[in-house]
Amino acid sequence: MNNLLTDIAGVRVGHADDAGLGSGVTAVIFDTPATASMDVRGGGPGIREGALLDPVATVQQIHGIALAGGSAFGLEAGGGVQAWLAEQGHGYRIREAVIPIVPGAICFDLLNGGNKQWGRLAPYRDLGYAAAAAAATSFGLGSVGAGLGATTSNLKGGLGSASAATQSGIRVAALAVVNAAGTVTVGDGPWFWAAPFEVGGEYGGRGLPPSFTPDMLAMRLKGAMNATPPENTTLAVVVTDAVLTKSQAKRLAMIAQTGLARAIYPVHAPLDGDVVFAAATCEKPIDPLAGLTELGMIAANVTARAIARGVYSATALPFAGALPAWKDRFG
Image 1 (cartoon, helix red, strand yellow):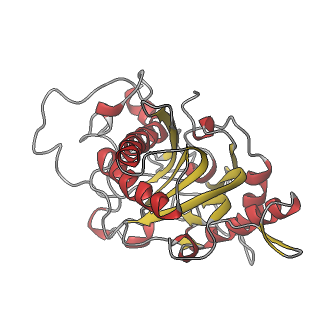
Image 2 (tube, helix red, strand yellow; image 1 turned 120 degrees about the vertical axis):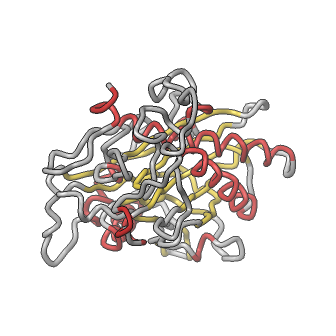
């Protein structure tokens, strides 16, 4: 176990980003089709192929997931991932036609100081293709891929990942892009809200503050009272090797959303577009009640850990007025 989404066999992750743009794309690639669904809690989501992931929709499996910056422009990243998958011959087959199924979601990073004057054609389709082509079992965390331009209300956001297993050995892992309206840390200190779930000092080992004051619990929003709904989103992908139906994948995504509440304060606000994808590679059978409940509990934990790791691993953008990274402030 490498504490990454790719601890699930048959899953690869790739990044492509542009430092001058201050934005990028992350592609999750499944070597064999994965059963998938999703859960949306934020008030301002931006989603590709969302209706297809409804449990009542006919297509059951997907071939990749595209996460991108760029707000609505970033939805084109899914087309790039789809193009790469099509070249590999991976997709949903209808006679001689092959159609890769690539849901996706975006976060807003258009005001982070990067050069977004790209002209007629946004770069996200090409970045999506490059991210898919770069997919591997090892990948970077922090200010990379879709997390390059991400921010929170007080610190640089980023991309994180974490993994764990149930008592019976079923694995579950998460990848998160943290571009939240709220905070991932308590007040103005170094403590992560997700501290109770930390494993092995993976985000600094600072624990929680010895006590809480009203100021620590005060609302801190990116943009303060001028914040607007399209500007903030946390995106998460949860993958397990359990055998799940599409409806069970939906339930897993719903339970995993509680991981956002364990790591971000506040969360699921009208100012966020929070989305959790859940996918299953369907290798190991699971009890549909107690087993799925335990799996969801651990999925929420790894989602919270992935969020904290994304902020902990981030580096500040090289633009005037950019937010500091956690390590810039707390070392």
